Image (cartoon, rainbow, N blue to C red; front, side, top):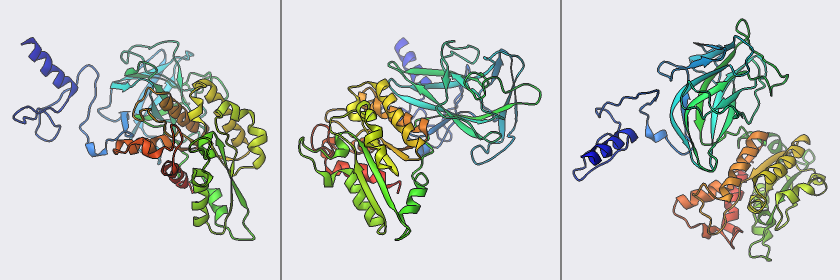
Length: 438
């Protein structure tokens, strides 16, 4: 009897649709099914499941009626008010207006959420719409047990981007890292005006005439990079359609390891089938009046640390219009932190010269599970995505393209010429993603 009670309790708590021998549906969350209640701070809604996918956005707080209860502590003052400046970033009816009544950096607001799980070795992203009169130092914590706990005082999660459009709505994006064991988020704590890492530093809010507004807090699977296919290379595409004598040479530089170099079965190199040459062929067909150079500065067997050392003399000397970086396969032997530093150095040097940068996540490796989230390949994939978002550059998610092929029932070995080199079909997958920017 105890087993049966426990079994049915689990069914109710987990909200799982089960059928038994008579195909009796306990709850399918359609009309006229069992009533559902929430308790102890949880919040739920019945939604159209056709809109749910792995990249869907989970809204956790929009300050509209029925949203989770908000509390403030340590001097933080808030009220729910009408949206002060509706626009295309945030057109919702209500927003949270925040002020400070003292000089504690840790004045905060907090609210509970239905448990959010970030699996091990995975990153999700918390998105917060903000409207401030100056650059804020917004800090979050997600390790509190509920809205009345402070979380770990040594933890400070800051956004991977900056808010600079003062007086208008913008989005701050915070990484939620699962770490080696995964995490469960039960409450979100926001310190809207910590005052340490803003420019100029110091508090920017008070409780009389200077307030900050917060809204549309959500969790997403991706970082929502603003470097879109449509607009990232607008200026380059304008050059590609010019005719002689108004046109000029466009330099596409491919920096990385053996994959852009064209290695198939080492030591055999198949230059004409590798993705840099496929890109050249297809761009030449699309832009018949353009003069396009594809320049490979890649070296087989090299990692990003080595690539960064020769970046000035071997890469920047070619004056790239667009720079592609593809090093993750070989960076697995170097570790995440050194690879991050090397990529970040190269990206920032290129941006300083006005070069458009496109980062590539890795292509597959034989016998590495493309669906797993605990592999070095996956970890470096997530790091490349993070680098793209932090630096505001574009991303070609090669890993995702091969992953989708696996999900669709295709064997990843069908796209490999050797253990870690794509064949022509594999290079075509990568090239087609690059071409979306053009």
